[in-house]
Image (tube, rainbow, N blue to C red; front, side, top):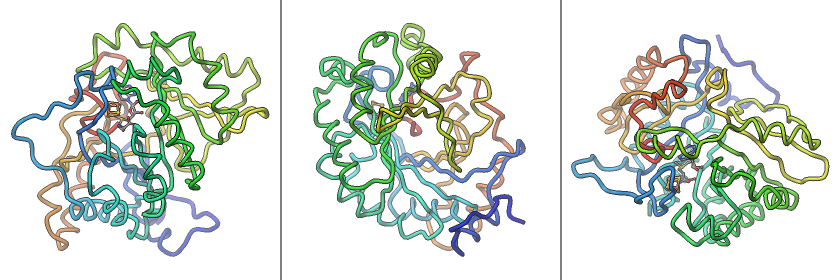
Length: 345
Ligand code: SAM
Ligand code: SF4
C-alpha cells in the first residue's frame, strides 16, 4: 500500500516510486537525498572551513559517477523523488556535468537540485540546466562586497550574483539564496536584501548558524536566533507562503511589492526535525541519517556492481531504525560532524 497520496500529474513511474517509501519509526518518509560529491572546497567560509579545505591522508577516494548512479538508483526504488548535489563545493569536480547526466536518466527522480557557492554559476548555468539540474541554491551571506570577501576568503560577490542572475535567465525552476545569520552582520544589509528580492524571483533564506565540532567557539560568538527576522517580516506586511509537498524545513514569506520571497531556516526551533524528509550520502559512500548523527553506515561495498542492488537496498532499509527523532544541537551535541562540508550541508 502506498504511504503517499497520489497526486494529479503523477506518472506511472512516480506511482512505482511511491509504493515502497523509505520511512522511520516516527512516521517520517524519506524522499529526498542530499548527496555530497566532495569535501573539497575553494572557499574558506569562516563558519565552515576557515582554513580552507585541508586534505587528510588515507581517506578513500570520492565516489565515482558509476557508484553515485548505483546509489541513487537504489534510493529511487525506495521512493526517492529529489536529489541535491552538495559538498564541499560540488562544482569543483571535473565530472560534475557527467554526474548530473547520469542521475537525470533515473526515471523516478523528479528533481535534481544543487547547492553551490556560485563561483562558476555564471559561466555554467546553461550547461548544468541542460544536463538536468532543475533547482539551485546559492550561498550569499552578505551583499556587502568587503564583508563577503572577508567571510569567504574570496572577493567574488559580483560573480556570484551574476551566477544567480544567469540561473534565473536560464530557466531554473527554483533559485534560492542561503544566507547564514551571523551576529557580526546583524543590523547591516537588510535594505540590500530587500532590494535583491524586489528585483528577482528568488527565495532568500536566512539560516541559523549551526554548531559543528570545529566551529564551537565561533558559534558561541556569532550565533543569533532567527526569530528577529520572523518578527521583522510579519511586522512589515510579509505573510507565510503555503508549504509545497516535499518542502524542507524552511518557512517562506511573500509580500505583494516584492517578486521574490524571504525565508527562514531555524534548526534550533522546537519541532524542526518533525518534518525531516531527507537522508545524506557522503562523498565516500557513507549513509548519514542526520546532519548531526554519528559516523554513518558504509554503503561503498554495495556500490561496486550493478547486481548488488538488492543487497544495497537491504542495507539502506536496515539502517532506518537507527534514525533518531531529532538532533541534539541544543545540548551542544553536534554528533560526529566537524563541519558541514564533511557530509554535505
Ligand atoms: N559549498 C556549497 C555552498 O556553500 O553552498 C555547498 C556546501 S555548504 C556546506 C551548504 C550550505 O551550508 C551553505 O549554504 C552554507 O552557508 C551552509 N552552512 C555551512 N556551515 C554552516 C553552519 N555551521 N550553519 C549553518 N549553515 C551552514
Ligand atoms: Fe565551502 Fe560551502 Fe563550506 Fe563555504 S559553506 S567553505 S563554500 S563548503
